[in-house]
Each structure stands twice: as structure tokens, then as C-alpha cells.
Length: 372
Image (cartoon, rainbow, N blue to C red; front, side, top):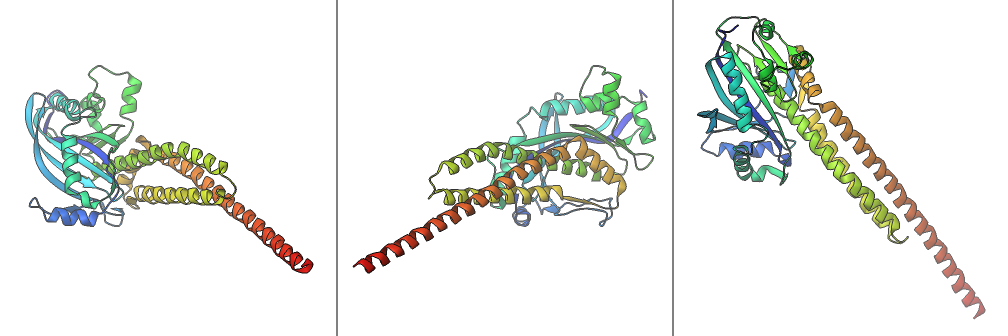
């Protein structure tokens, strides 16, 4: 349909950072409330019943100052928000307004946003993130100096020039350039793959999920789907962080075990015990934070949002990376158990030697006294 216009909508450039081991959200609220810009808000899902789909620990939503960005040769005023999760992740969302344009112009604007402030761009993200880190420094527990990142582009249409059935939209306009960022015509298999994860609840809505982009047609101005996509990305980022952390720790652990085993008999028990304590601490910390990330959203009754949430987790490969983290944690746990057993065994051997030595000394003293 060549005359289909986007009456109102937006493009959200979303980037997430693992900025700390954990974040004290209560302290964030206190810090932000003291600012002239206004109070922080605990996030909630608006359309879902409270008991059916809720945050385990509601993240804190901060409304930042609007910024001016040059997109497609034009200066655009964009609203900026940040959402902070207690397991150490901070998201930054830059919302580019889109209204009164034909579909092709909307697609071009989305692709321009991706080029200008997408994955390869460092600004304005670095400036915004640094401002948050400075203002919230006291709320960050063990901040990361070089946080890893995830990004996602969410394209939202709230009103079209024609009343249409949401599920019919892919047949009326070409969603592929919007979902892929490609200007060339893609193969039929690729096109089908990009449109495979489609969801509709009412007749007039549509959600399409892909790895790095999502499209939402939602006339009711509901933000729950966008929030769920962000949560899934936050979980991906957290599990990626601990997957990479354990990748670095496992070779280091093997080296430490070798050194401990090369130690003399007298030093071995202490070294085994010290290393076992370090590994136990690592397991405890990683388990605590990954469990928080894994349980950030509680889904019980809202089948529609639950389907979107689980599909997003699957597309983002969260279960696969979570399983990899669990396997590596299992290796560390087994190593801890083996070291603890070796430390206990070495202590037992030393105790036996000490007892034998004491018996020999006692016998020697008795013999000396007897012969004397």
C-alpha cells in the first residue's frame, strides 16, 4: 500500500552496559530524588495484571535530559531514559520521534538511526554513561571500568493512516528493510526467517522479533513489549558477562591448582584451603548474580507477554549462554570440592605424622630416663 503513512511512532536505540557487580537501587532513588530533574520511578508493566507478570526486583527508571542528535542530515530532539537493574546492568534508551511520514521514509529514518547511533557509534552513549556513573557512583558496588555492551533497535508505530489488521501489515508493506537494515532484496528463506517470530494479541497489533531489531505496532501506546525486550537483553548481557568472566577464570584456576600441588607437604594444606576459599567465593558471587538476572521477570498468567518474553530469550540465545555459565560453574564447584578434600587429606596426613613424631619423642624420652 503505497499511500500508507505513519501518523505517530518512534525509533528507540537501546544500549545496555554491565557497569557494576550490583547496584543499590534504593540509593539510586535517593540520589535522583535529590536532583532538580525529579524523582526516580520503579518500573512496572502497565497492561499486565500485577500477579501475572511482574519484576522480581523492579528496576529504577530515570528520565534524563533530552539531547540533540544529527540523524539523516537533520537535528532531532530525542528523549533519553535509563533503567538500572539491581544485578549491575544499566540500559540507556534514546527515543527518536517519527510522525507524518510515508512508510519508506519511516524505514529510512530507522536505518539512519542505526547508522548514526547504532552499534558502531560511541557517542552520545559514552557521555551519557559517564554522567550516570559519576552521579550514581556511591550506589555502584564494585563498578566495572570496561563494561561490556548489548544493543537493540526497537521500531514502534502507534498510529497509521489506515485502520488495518496487524497480522496483515507484512503483506501490505515491506517490513524486511526495517528489520534487517538491508536495502537489497533478500532471499525468500531469509525473509521468512526474519518474519518467523510474529505475535498479535488484538486484531490491530503486531510484534516482530529478530536478533538485533524489533518492530512493534501498538495503537494503545502500551510499552510493555518494549520493556520485555529490554529485560531479555539485560539478561543476555549479564550471562555474557559471567560467561566471559569464567572463560578468563578457568585457565587461571588450573594454573593455581598446579602451583598448589607443587607446594611442599607442609604448605600444601594451607594453599589448597586458600584456593578452595577463593573458588567458593567466585561460585557464590556468580550464582547470586546470575540467579537475580534469571529471575528478574516473573511470568505466571499473561500468556501473550510470556510468549514474547520466551521468544526473545530464545532469539537472544539466553538459555544457551546460561547453560554454558552453569557448566563452567560446575567445573569450578568440582574443583573446589577436590581441593577441599585434598586440603583435608593433607591435614590428616600431617596430623598423623605429628602424632607419630610425638610418640617417638615420648618413647625416646622414656628410654633416656630408663637408661639413665
